Structure formats: structure tokens, C-alpha cells
Image (cartoon, rainbow, N blue to C red):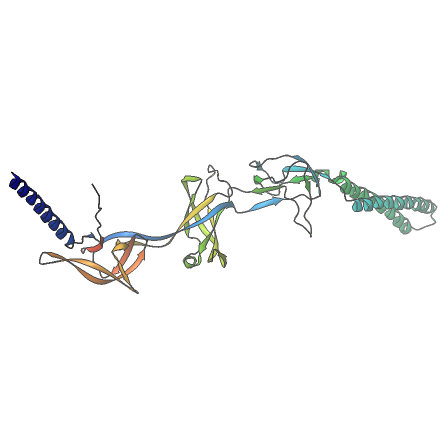
Length: 370
């Protein structure tokens, strides 16, 4: 019985030894390399680039007051449509004391001159009625009286404008009423009732009461790298995708390429602008982030293979053509002339036919542990 047990143990040890040896021998054997294979096909190849930017109105106008003062009333809100000449806000004038004093002094002086002109006219009229002075002298004095009256009216108007911002003679075109200079949508009203505002002059740009733009005339503004700007020409079509409106795409046409580069993160960028076609029912907002896709180059009928099947060596390109030699598969390295690439497929201009197959990358089997 003991001999039988020893024999069984010896057999088990031998089987384990033989199994281990066979396993290690199989592992040490070189595995057959399997490659993917591709057949050339006729396709359209496009080289495109994506430009990031934003949507904005072509012309955005800042509406500024004609006088300095305090906002007393806002007639409009952002988002509303406004016609040219329509009132957006009202301003109460805070007169400048120096200008006010000068205007009051001008009124007093005009009154004095008018009183003297009346006295001179009455004296001259009596002499003219007695035929003691000529008609020419009488007309001069009468003219001086009329000029004095006009100067009083002008001085009073000037005083009212300085003090109140409006006079009786120009009430319809009051400078206290801030009017839109164009028709469009109000994008922003950065002031509130009670805010002080100043008019534009030599020393400052003035306070912006509202920003107004025509939202039916929009452009895409973005930047393109210097390596691609040389392939752009005015009039090129573009497809605009807006981040907030993923389901919508808009046609656009390139209309401006900056002649000067600006540096951004160490790279030279050129600004571009494109006119965006927008339907009336499309409600776009100023400042939307957007991407523009431009086709830089394309070939409509090209013999193509996956770019992964190309071997690049210096300035030359090669493929491995599949050959059947005496029933054995072999690969012939062959130089080819390539053309346009879209990053996935590449055009083969010379060195390959549509009936041949080329070798692709090695097929890597997934190693799964049970």
C-alpha cells in the first residue's frame, strides 16, 4: 500500500513538472504578429480648422447725454426695441455756477442795451417825423433796436439752457431728453435713476446711458493661428455653432482678416470677422460663445487610405503593400506620394492603385484574466 502511494505521488510530481515545462515552452515561442489591412477607396478629403470666438453686433452704439446732470427717469429697459429718436432717459440739469453767472450777466447787459436802444429810437423817430434826419439814419437806429430785442431773447434762451437744460425756443429738441441715435435693441443700460452723468467733451468720453445695436446684422469675431491664416481669403464660407444653441448652425462668410498679428499665450493670432446670416425668428444674443468651422482645402475625388497606414520617413512616405507569394502573405515596402489629409484619411496621389491592399497598424489582442 505504501509503495502504491509513493508511485501516485511520483506520477503527480512528474505531471506537474511536465505541464510546467510545456507551459514555459509555449510562452517562450514568438507569437505571430497580425496586422490590420485596408483597401484604398475614393473619398472626399477636407482639411478644416475650428476657430473659437463670439457673436456680436456689427455696430454697437453708446448713447450719451448732451448735458451733465442727474438721471430723473428711465423710459426703456434692456432687451426692448427702440426707434431712432425715441427717448430713453430724462436728465435734470445741475448748472455750472460759472456758466450760470455768465448767462445771468448776459441777460442783464442785454436788458440795459435794449432800454438804451428804445430811448435812441424814440428820439430818432421824433426827429424823423419832423424831417430833421434822413431816412437812412432812422433805419440804422430802428435796426439797432431790433438787434437789441433779439439779443435779449437770445440771452434769455441761453440762461434757460444753462439753468434748465431747455428753453422755450427749443423745447421740442430738449437736451434733457436722451434719445437713441439708431434703431435697434437696447443691450444694456448701465445707469440708474439718481446717477450723475456728464456729457462727452475733450477731457472725457462722457457717461453711457445705453448701448443700442441692430441685432439683425451680426458678425462672428475670432482669432486664427498664423500657420493657417495664409489659407484664408475673403468670402470663404463658414459654419457657426453656438455653444448655448447646439442644435442650430448658421452660415457665415469671411469678410475681414487682420493685417497685424497679436500675441496670445506665446502664439501669434490674427483677428477675423465673418458676417452671420440670421433669420428673423432666430433670437441671438450679443456675446454668445461660438465656434466657426472653415474648410481650408479639399479634394472631391481622391484615392485615400487611413493615415495610420502611412510610414513617414523624413520627407518621404511609404506604405506596406500586401502580396501573396506562394501562398504566403508578405508585405512590400513602397514609396508613395501623398496629398491632403483630414487627420483620419490621407490622399495618395502616386504609387498605389485601388485594387491593392495596404498594411495597417498591428492588431493588439486584449489580454483578459479569468
